[in-house]
Image (cartoon, rainbow, N blue to C red; front, side, top):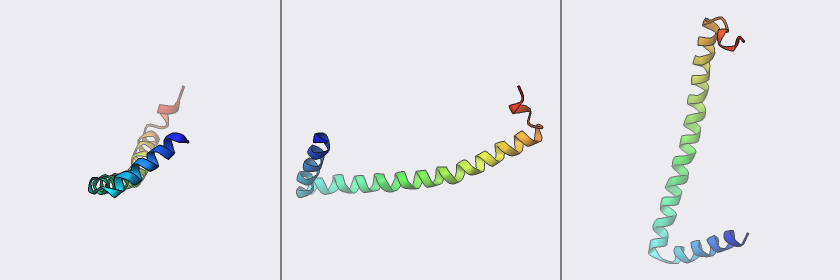
Length: 66
């Protein structure tokens, strides 16, 4: 909890400087890229899963056989 408080105080101090604005801008860009990557991976992951299911069905389910 103390580390979080310290980070918040550091962020507030940096926001007072012009350099702090740059840090915040980079953080916002990083968040935007992360959210976009998560959404894209979710959409692509479903498609990839469908391809593997189709291949598994074509093989007669042999991949899951003991």
